[in-house]
Amino acid sequence: MRVEVVTLFPELIEQATSHSIVGRAQASGSLELHCINPRDFTSDRHRTVDDYPFGGGAGMVMKPEPVVAAIEAATGGDPTIPVLLTAPDGEPFTQALAQELASLPRLVFVCGHYEGIDERVRDGWITRAVSIGDYVLTGGELAALVMLDATVRLLPGVLGNESSAHEESFEGGVLEYPHYTRPAVFRERGIPEVLTSGHHANVAKWRRTQALVRTRARRPDLWEKLLPLSKADQKLLA
Ligand code: 6GU
Image 1 (cartoon, rainbow, N blue to C red):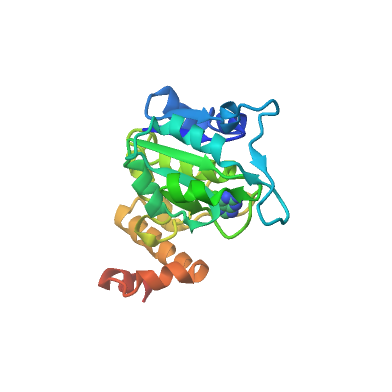
Image 2: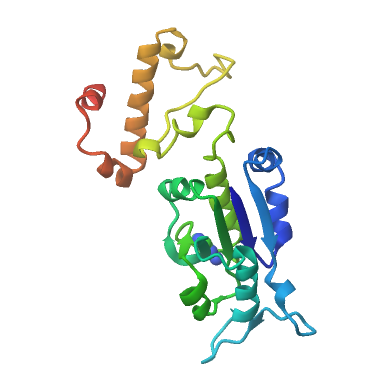
């Protein structure tokens, strides 16, 4: 998958993607990542990327010319490449959207900044605006990194264990079950007996039960979507 990030802070993206799993995805060729800086598409002496809002008010607005030039450099003018804008008023980013993005050959993230981006850029050059939650960040870079991370780990061959991308939270709309590793007793705290029983069917039942109980207790919003439960799940909770 090839991803371009249009950003005023390419070092932030490059630094954060140079390690761990996303770094390895680039080294192995699963991910090709490029940053494009709108500041490189300015022609004035001060390399200006923002300006005052028409109509007045606080804050600055990203000027359309440099960001559109950067988007066009990112897509090469190919109108089939999705261009996602990070914006607190965008649609919510979800695991389902991560799956959708992971299926694409190419993608462009545009990191919003200042008070916002000229609305004509959104109207003419943005496929969809996406938010990572109901809070306001100083810029879109951290949001783009979150979305990129969630997407890249779903690419074929990126996670060591192919099943680990499927077993966890939100696959199937249920939270993950609790995990334990050695030692079996840590500062007088033991682990659930079933996990050392060697009885794989009982381990699977325990994990599914824990996942359901946790989802019901912690995320009633997800729980509602799980209903009605299968006969097997009903039996686990009985
Ligand atoms: Cl995508 N951008 C900004 N600036 N703030 C956010 C966000 C995005 N998602 C949540 N807050």
